[in-house]
Each structure stands twice: as structure tokens, then as C-alpha cells.
Length: 289
Ligand SMILES: [Zn+2]
Image (cartoon, rainbow, N blue to C red; front, side, top):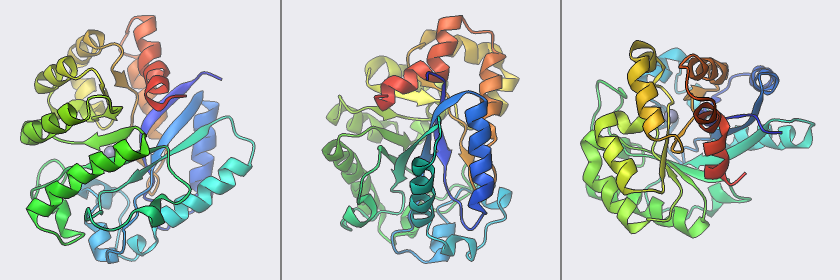
């Protein structure tokens, strides 16, 4: 089956009833989705309060999260859910990209990797962010210095290379353009998705031109796309093979967003082949499906 693919859904179940999430995934299957990439978030030994700080403010509010909720280990709940799903008859394929945002760069990762994942998720939030993400510096969760935090990020790229899987790496290129450029130079053959068009279409166009292994997704951009559809259509048409469908949906709230993003893309009036590439073809290549 060739259908739609959403490459960016956070697990973060945090105590929500998995049966509700399952019914939402079955609806995505009915809407024509072929695969979704889901990002489980292990706390890696951090306290529930510190795990809560790994979640951006908007999501903490949306799901009314407390440290009681984050006391449920996200990777454990994901493993149980995925095992059940894989043992049932489903057309929709669930792929797992483990979210290593809580990693200190030192802990041996085999406990969290175990039977493997289809990819790795990383995120660079080095400073207190009261506007976009509404969260403290991410290094506070593992309790490491800023220098060690950047070192852990470099090790995450190295680990991804060793595992030979694709990477979904969130970085604001207006803040950390030099850091990401260094990594992209060092790992020029890595399959890497820098989502949200890097938070700056202008700077990101340059990255896409210089690094042909980089792709992106449109997750979290719905309000911006709605307010400037012509500009986004133009950007997508300039990079027709590089941009994928993503929603940033989170399971403690709902997995309905992928279909909303699907309809948003369809409303842009893109050429048929560009639309098909964005909705599935580019992701299929990125994920090796
Ligand atoms: Zn995200």
C-alpha cells in the first residue's frame, strides 16, 4: 500500500488510555496513512519533575501534564503498545524513533536501544526559552554543564552514524546555525530531518542547498502556513524532494492532527507530483520504506 506518511508524532502517553490512542491510529489508517513515525521519550533515570521539563510548555498545558503523569515511563508504555499493534492486523506501520533528549552523553544506551528503533530523535535547546518552546535549558534534566550538553549532542550524531539509522533533529538555525553546519559537514551522508523548516525559511534554504542529505517536515507550522499559503507553496516548490508531512501530534492529547495537516497540504494547490512527494514519497525515501 502506498499512502500518506507523517514523520513526526510524539508518543508522550504519560498515563493516557492507550485504547483511545489506538482508535485514533485506526482512524489515520482509514484516512489513508501508510506509516507514521512515533517518538517515545525515555526519562533515562531523571525524576518525574525533570522529565516534565523535557516537554515544551504548550504541550504541558494542552495535556495538563503533572509530575504524576511523567512518572509513567514513556518508552515502557510505547514498547507495550507497539508489540500489541505489531501482533494485530494493521495496514498502518508504526516506526519508532527514540527521543534521546534526556541523554547526558555518557550513559550506555543499550538499555533504551535494546531490540532497536527505526531512527533517532534529538533536539537542541541550549538556553532558557520563554517564547517558542517555553522550557528551561534541556541540560537541566540530566544535570550537566552547557559544554557537556553540546558534547552529548555531538555524541548523538556519532551514535546515529554507528546505528546507521535516520535522524530527526530539532534545531533553531537562527540560534545554532554554526553548530548544525559543523555536524552536517562531519556527517554528510547521514539521512537527517531538520523539522519545522529550521524555524527560518531564509536560512534554511541555504542549508538545503549546501547539504543535499538534509530534508525537513512541516510539523507545527500549520498556523504559519494558513497565514501565508503562497509563500509556503513557493518554498515547497523550490525544494519538491526535500519536505515531508509532519504534524507534531502528541499522544497524551490526540493523534488527530496528521489528517488535519494532510488536508492543509491538499488545500495548497501544489502540482500533483509535488503534493504526492510531500505526502509520502519523500518520507518513503528518507525512511527506506
Ligand atoms: Zn516535535
